Structures are given as structure tokens and as C-alpha cells.
Picture 1 (tube, rainbow, N blue to C red):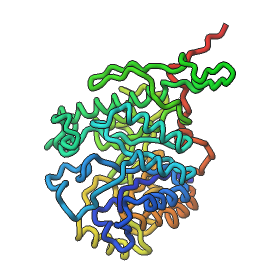
Picture 2 (picture 1 turned 135 degrees about the horizontal axis):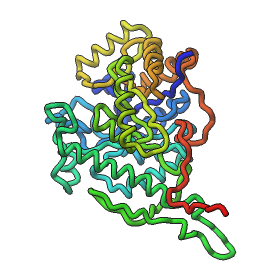
Picture 3 (picture 1 turned 120 degrees about the vertical axis):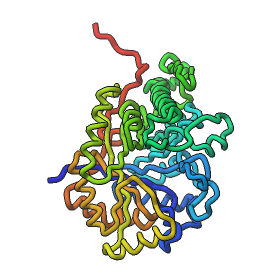
Picture 4 (picture 1 turned 60 degrees about the vertical axis):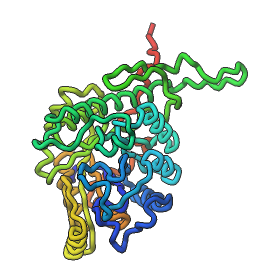
Amino acid sequence: MPDRIHLAVALDGAGWHPAAWREFTARPTELTTPAYWRDLARTADGAGLLFATIEDALSLGGRSFEPDAETRRDRVRGRLDAVLLASFLAPVTRRLGLVPTATTAHPEPFHLATGLQTLDHASRGRAGVRLVAGSTPQERANFGRRADGPTGIPASGRVEDDPALLAAFREAGEVAEVIRRLADSWEDDAIVRDLETGKFLDRERVHNVEFEGEFFSITGASIVPRSPQGQPLITALAHQTIPYRFAAEHADLVFVTPADAAAVGGILNELADAADEVRTLDEPLRVFADLLFLVEDTRREAEAVWNRLQDRSPLATDARVVVGTADDVVDEIAALAAQGVDGIRLRPARLPADLDAIAERVVPRAAGAGILLPDDGAPTLRERVGLPRLASRYARQEVGA
């Protein structure tokens, strides 16, 4: 019996391939409509996927540092705010976790935290977030409040060689900490609702977070009462040492991009070493491997579609790419599962075509092969991932006699 894992999906516009919007299966006129995203989310929900991440960025060019990112006309441009979109999707889905992407450099941490708490209430405990450190020059220009920041990956390719990138990850760590503190600032029983006495709130059970950091400070409590999960699921994407350390210290779950199954062991070892040094969270870091894929009935058909997409607008990615049949994707999932990851985040090259392939072909085959963890009925996303619901850090401890 192979190791059993979770499957999740990463949703982005018309798909992860930049030319996907030109395919006849695409819906390019609907990318910012509620119906389009409702259909995607319901397909993922019906397939039994654990959660869906929703991409986001704060400029037309997205997260790209390419000089023509803002002006080129052959890529999808325009998107919906991921946190607001996730709140819209909450009541039209049942079990699917909703994990919007949030940039940590510009949104106020207080607003981000309360938005995620609101999402957790709206989804009845299915909220998460993927934190992205730093920003592009165009994102900074759109806000106009800060000029300094990363300008791209340094020539060495290593985050630690750029002080601006190091600062961005320190700031992201503060944002993660404040999200958790604000989520804890209301105890579970802070709302009394005593009609006879007229007491709605036990103010002693609502706590100021009193956070003083390198980049910002926050004094008060959240405006949102404690949500079903207690804390939202915090996730991050990591490719190298500094992002690995950030995830090990601050995240519940990390997405990694092994070149193949053989590369997983080295990544897991580096994450474990980082966790030994910096992790203070009680639960082990969950690890999901990213897999970008395109599925057709035959490999020849899949390769023909892929070649057409690449001719139109080549995709550059460090994620593993599988182009072939559903069986090819399941074989890769099984190989990654055997290396000890907790789950796979599938990146569909085309939407909705490859998401439909997940639901109709990949999930049934993976389930039949005994690879997938069944839905255990746990009510919240954190519990389905295997994480406990934590009590508020500010809750008064009962002392035994």
C-alpha cells in the first residue's frame, strides 16, 4: 500500500500556462465573473480536494520582475481580490478549504487578519492564507508609500544575498505572527449575550495583542470574534533556504517544488533542519509538493497541446511538469507520496479543462490506487490537515487546587 496523501489545487486565471486563455476549452470572457469561479470551486469541492489556493498580486504584471510585465498584451491581465473572492466562494462550497494568496508588504496586517477571520466565519472553518513576502517595483509604485524593496532575484539566485529580500521575509514573519495573535485576541467564550443583565461581552476575555516589531506595531484586539478554526491555516511557497526557514518558523504548511521525486528527500531534510533551529509551533510542518500538469486522452495529444501552448508563450517554472494522461499524473503523485510528502498541490495548466481532468480522471484513479487519504469528516480545514484547534494564547489558565 503506498503512502496516502491529500490532493489540493492551485487556481490562477485561465490556468498556469500563460497561453491557456487562447485554448478553445478556456473561458477568457468570464475570468472575472462570479459564475466562473463558482464553477471552478464547485468542481474542486465535488472532487473531494482538500483545499484550493487562489493566486493574487498587486499589479497588472503580477509577481513578475520582467521589464515588460506591465505592458505585454499576450497574457491574462486583470484579476479579482483573492480574499474577497474566497469569501464569495465560501457559501457555495461545502468541504473545500479556501486559501487566498496575500502579499505581506503592503496590505495592513490588521486588515488582512480580520479579512481572514471573516473568511473563516463565512466558510465555517475552512480558511487559510498563502503569504507572499516582498513586492515588485510596480506593486510598490501602485501603493506609493515605500520605495525600497526587492528588484528581482540576485545574480547568485540566493535570497540571502539580497538585503531587501531578507527584510521582506522578516516582515512576512511579523505578519504571520500578528495574524495568529489577532485570531487569538478573543477567547472562545468572550461573547456572553446575557439578555437579563444586558451584558453582551465579557471584556476581560478580549485581549490587546501589544505587538511591537521591526516593521509595524499593533496595540488592540481584533474587531472579529474568534472564528471556528481559532487560527486560519497559514501556508507559504518555498524554493530555497531562506523561504524554507520562513516556512519552518511561521507556517502550518509549505508548498515545495521538487524537480522530481528523487529531489524530495533533500528538501525534506533541509526543512527538518530549519525546523530544528527555528520552529516553535507544536505541530510538525506539513509539506505539499507542487505538480504542474496537462492531461489528454493520450500522451501524443497532450504533447501536441503543450507544444502549441509553448509556441504561443513559453512557460518558465521551477515546478515539476507532467504532460500526458491521467495515469501519468497518478504515477507521479504516487512517486512523490512514496517520498514522504503530506500532499500534492496540483497546478492545472489549463482551466477549466485540467481541473475537470482532476475531478473526472485523476482523483478516481488515485483513489482506486489507494493513494488518497479519505475525507474523515473533520469539520475544519486545520483538522483535516491533522492540526488541532488551539486555545487562545491569552485564555486564562485554570489552576487546580
